[in-house]
Length: 233
Image (tube, rainbow, N blue to C red; front, top):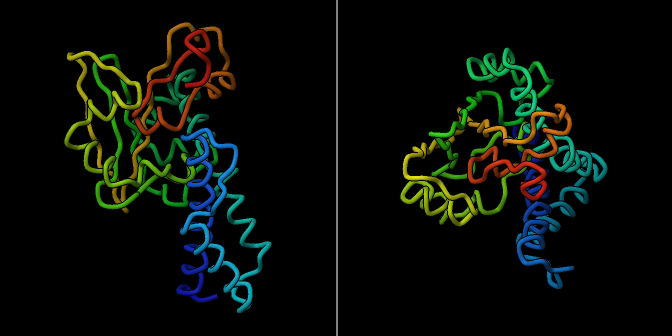
């Protein structure tokens, strides 16, 4: 298969996955049990998929496998494992902050728009916030598909102009003595936030800690909460 055709099919698969993610996000945000009318994007993706299958350019099972990969194998759970390992293993954390690509590869993750990574550590005095002001560059290998709000024009602009206001909208209140650092992702460089480990989790093992870590915390718009603070953040 030539490069152009491969890129086209990969883009189609990503679009299908993005449509699925968008629909799920819409349902969660508005607490709807169902969506009566498919969105325009969903209809266009389905039409494209049908055309590709009809022309014999792609096998439906192969396309489903690609979408499943983005939805279930590439996702926030990968990033959460990285964060949890850094919390329990100081040596790993040091390697992660020094050379994120190599440290992430130690856990078997990488590639798929996450080839060049930098990990940003949050501290009591520093809150890192990640955005892509030009489009939606995002570390798919460790965070999966980007959420709809991350790709939206309001977030992309306001994260730079008014980062504290954006954080407040996500329920993250910071003291005036906390510095907010905004990082702009590009096609060549992606960021992952290493959030602070919440208090009261000293007795949790690595697996239990990973369950607390959320996608939003690894983008930097939220804090990780302990179970006593309300379960998953």
